[in-house]
Image (cartoon, rainbow, N blue to C red):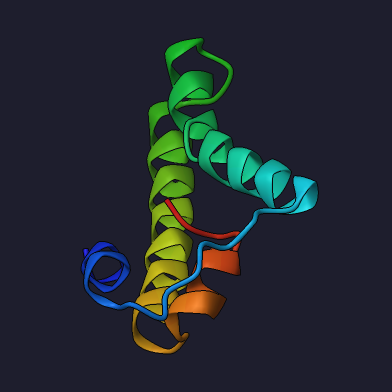
Length: 84
């Protein structure tokens, strides 16, 4: 939400053009989050493994989002491929 506010209220803000690699990483990063859920629902892995996998991926996503929000400046954050 801070990035949206910054875009609207900062006159010096310039939109960041995403590279093809960044876009692919973004798509894969968001698709991987669903893998434990789908594997559990399809019966490939048991419920405990699915829960552990989902929790591990969610923890990594939390760390990436905290890093993006609290450490990077807005231009770097918009180039950061690990965002939800």
